[in-house]
Each structure stands twice: as structure tokens, then as C-alpha cells.
Image (tube, rainbow, N blue to C red; front, side):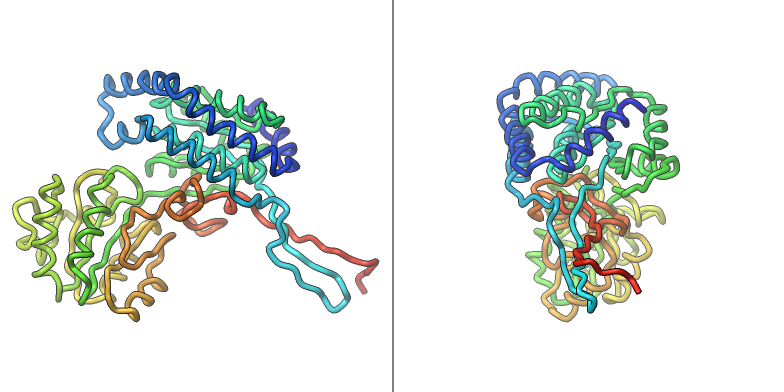
Length: 413
């Protein structure tokens, strides 16, 4: 682990000075390799899937583990998208002149070495790497044991693409040690690692945060709410709720709790009960919504609110007004994603200001809290802590700024 840290640190100095053209070439080469080596990558992934089936991995984790031709095509597309983005390194965010003539600016610079600890998502191996490399960083990757064969194959392509572009292969270090001791040691490598990003279940994030001796950017759990306001377009709201819960229930931006204004409950909740239950959704309902949702509903337990189900289960509650909805979100939300369905502009703007989450949306699905969907090309994770980034982390969020000063011989008096 220490050797990996040393190699990554040395490579990070080269990456910080790398030309935009070299970084672009590396990412474009990787896109080509992902297409050319599709058969080998799917064969490696099938080994992981076979082991996962034997271990009886649950449905949501199997979904995150599985690579397909379409997923690989999306990964290649992300490489090309990120390659085409403006290079942030060296850009001046702002400049101003002091009365003594000093010209002061803030310049974008790489973070240095970024370490990622993540679970059964082989796509993260590519997403994290391409963003880190574009931002001039080196990256240390420690994926879950469930995806070991897939990750090793993807890491080999990353090394090949870097070398083809004249960049150090050591800029991507993949840790193939599957023991927990490897993660514990990584958490102590603060002399080499500048920031650590855990991406996975709540227990993983807590374990890494508790052990880390360097700054941690948390990709915490996604307890996402939708509030259906009085006067909302109920047909549109139904589609949004359905998409948020049903399209991919095992991911962090899936809808977990539905809050409905009491003025709309009698009209809206039977619609929800009929449409979502037909898709296999069951409901954990408060007293006011229980009778309105149909046979798929059962009484909610206290811990059903604030829970990330990762399944076709939706918590439901009827609220008096927006005040009560915002109070519920403040009590049970995880700072991930909150949405409102409303036709009232004043209420929409109030919700945007007061709902505390990394993405807040009006009349749109929770599923849009994703780097690719928001135009970042890819994401290294969705930060639910507010320092140094909040929300999906793309290339810009993998840099920081330093002050630069231009003088003409000034001295301080």
C-alpha cells in the first residue's frame, strides 16, 4: 500500500504538468480500448457475476456489478465527453488589482492524489479515473472484491491508454488486495493521499471516515424525497414519482419517500397505489395515506422514514403544508436529493432555497442527480458533505484553487 502511495505521488507531479493534449489523447484512447476489448471485459465481468450468484448477492448489488455492451458503450461515451471538456488546470477563476498595484488571482490546480474506496461498481473504476486524470491528478483505486476481475481488466486498459499518450501508467494505481487491512492502511497514507472518497453503503462510508487521517469527501446514503404540493399537476407528478422509484430502485438517487400535501392526498395517492403497485412497489404508509394506497400498503414503522430501501419499497406520508414537508426532510433527509412537484413559482423558489440537499429540483425526477445527466460527463461520486464539494463531483470539483500574485517589485510596508 505504501509503494502504491509513493508511485501515485510521483505520478501526480507529472500529471499536474501534463498538457491538455496528452490527457485528451489518453481518454480518447481509453474509449477506443473499451470498444475494442468488449469481449474480454464482458468475460472478466462474467467471472464476477458467477461468484456473486454463488454468494447469493442481492438484486440491487447484482445490478450495479453487471457490465453489458450498453454499459461499456456508455463508459466509452463518458471518456469522449470528459476528453472534450475544457481543461481546468491553470485556469484563472477570478482576478483583481490591489491599490498597491498587485494583481491577485485564483488559479485552478489539481488536488494531487485522490484515493477511491468503492463497492461492486466496476464503472466507477473508469469514471473516477478519467475525471481524476483530466483534472491532473493521480488516483488510487480500491474496488470491492465482488468486482475484482472486472476492475483488474479495466485498470489494465487505463494503464495502456496512459502509456500510449506518453503519461505515467502509475497515475492509476489499482489495489487488488481484497482484505479490510488494505483499506485501513490506505486510510493512514496521508503523506501520499490528498483526499479520500468512499463510495458505497453507509457502513463503508462510516468505517473509512472513522479511520482516515486525510480529508474525506463522503458519498453518503441517498434518502431522497418528493413533495407533491397543493395544486401540482398530478399526472406529471405521477410520472416523476414512478420514474424516481421504479426505473432503478437500487441506486442512491432513487426515490425513497413520498410526501403529499393533504389537499391532494385523496386524488393523488390512489393513482400512486395503482400505478406503482403494478410495477411491484409496496408502500410503508402513515395513517393518513394507508387506506388510500390500496392492498400494497402496510403501516410504516418508525425507522421506515429516513431509510434507504434499495428496493421497490416507498415510504409515504401526508403533510399539512410545505412547512411540515421541509421539517420532515430536515429530520430524515441525507443531503442527497430533494424534489418538489408544484405549479406555484413562489413555493418552488422557497423549496429550492430551504431544502438542504446536494441537488434540489422542481418538477423533475430525483434520478437526474447524476454527473452525466447534469452535463459533467461522469462523476466520481455525489458528495453529501459541503466541503469541498456538494453534489456530483466532476472535473472542476477534482481541482482546487490557489492564490497567484503578479507584482512589479512591491514590498509590504
